[in-house]
Length: 475
Image (cartoon, rainbow, N blue to C red):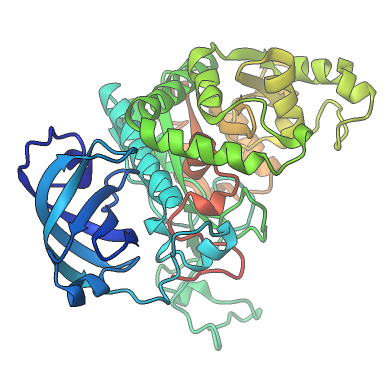
């Protein structure tokens, strides 16, 4: 039985066995108190060793970090902070941990814990983060399953660049010290495993569209990769993406799906991760005490989540948003770091102003300039904008990006050529517009960005188990 279950039991001196890792041990010869955690809950259970019940040599091995099994009677706790405790009668030490165990009971910096990623799960903070990450992943699969979507596994190795960014990791079996060359001196990828140049995917969207144009409603949820040399708190080289794609959806349908989806998933976390969220909220409040007043969040963690769940999202066009920003006091007093004009790719400060200051609710922006968006987005009749949409949240800015897809073959081919993609490289994608083309739409949600928002953590490296970043592929 896990500690989470034991803590809910009514104590009637029934025998229980608690298995887990020692968080703390304190006390004197007469009474020793041992706090144990098995990862099933943020809460520890306390075992009490009285007198000479346990052999002194065994008790010496029970140190912070040691793995133990403690058998005894479950009794009502006389101390504050817990309803029950275990009156220890037997202790088995599975694995010892000496004084060099790095996760001692004190506050460690996030930088230190990243260096100890193999052990940081044992801290309260990371136990909470990864239980919430699991809950969010489960909620995502449940939501789409209940809505009649099919989970499609799109390829991790690809020969296409869905975003056209070119920042991709190459996949090859060629000898990198002496690769075969063509007559012109280029690497001869015909000699490679796949007979052509391949990379790790940046998105499953293009393949997802193929599935949607037969199964109607699909979603992907898998790892994606970007070789962007960025060391910010919001970028990873390996991350997970959720990408639903729906046939017969237009932009309005896509916005409705995105809003309902993200509200449902966050509501699931609020209902099922209350203890972990309460702990992280308290942690965040303590962390913010050290910040200047103007850098502190105006909302607590739970308030921020309720802000998303309880508000209907404001919908407006990119052009309307630019007009609001140009008329804003922040723009007129030159408080924005980045300039505002039609045609720019909005920065986080602009997105947050719209959400936190102007509308005071989550925002969905639509109809962006075609020049700053991907080739596959459906072109508007004005010739200047596309049917794109971005969902903006407080504290983080854009969290979801999507669009209605271009379903007109001629327009799509023209746009592909405009952005410099060889149509031959995505012939299969273009063919879906020749054979039974249909209106369809979808969006992408970076999973780590969602976990970051829900947990209140400030660095994306702290919401994935083993972060992959420039010059860092440890563990």
